[in-house]
Image (cartoon, rainbow, N blue to C red):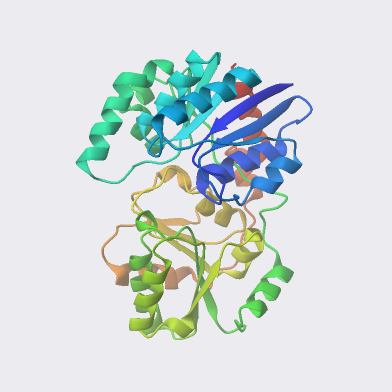
Length: 366
């Protein structure tokens, strides 16, 4: 059996983590296994599922917490367990340092997957990212990314243009992600949403990248034009209280549902009528892909890769004018669902195609 060690900060709900779990559920676990080295001290969302499938979870300090212990413990995990294949999830090239440690500890194949198309806009982060490429790029044997923008950000324009980055899509299990009419009724009943109310939806952690403050402005503009609307926000994060306060000041508290984490995302998406996603940047947003699999129209920021539009259900908007976003969302909020399964298969966004490619590139190194 081949075992892959995945290195990342934690295994809670997030784009990269969800991608790994989708692949993990679909690999032949008699031949391949996935283990995880994380820094998160608390129990993670996916941890029980990982253990139930035969995976291992190792906890070590983060580099910022204790660099010496991080290096020592990561090297020991790789040496003692004989990991030949190691995958580092990162958007910043300083994450490649972990692959230098892995290589020196005996790993034969060191892989990096880009998890985002930006780390923010500070000069310090840009310098650190640039230095990381210079110092540690030689330790990355296989480079993968979910989109062109994510590939260029993490590995550089030239590396991408030279064809040295493998684009592996954020695939979807089409037997799970589809439209559920009965579950739509149940979920809407759970949240007290009647048939005459249109549900605007968003899924994402509450931090600066996801731009929830602007999302509230968009919804406020929509409400001015149509009172029969509600907004469903799925996720948690540091800025949740701040967003709740903004909703309260705008008099929207009774119109916005803060649902927290959910493990029934296909049903949640089935309950929505339009998906609004004004992120400042993304690698390749899982939730936008999943929304399309249920036939849900999406309004997203034009900072996100054009590759996210798999089905024609995605409308791209420039950030800045909430009224424009509101008008576009209202145009499609009453749309009929379409079956997108064949488009997903044609464009190789089905989980079977993605898992096969992941195994070929990361486990078997073809």
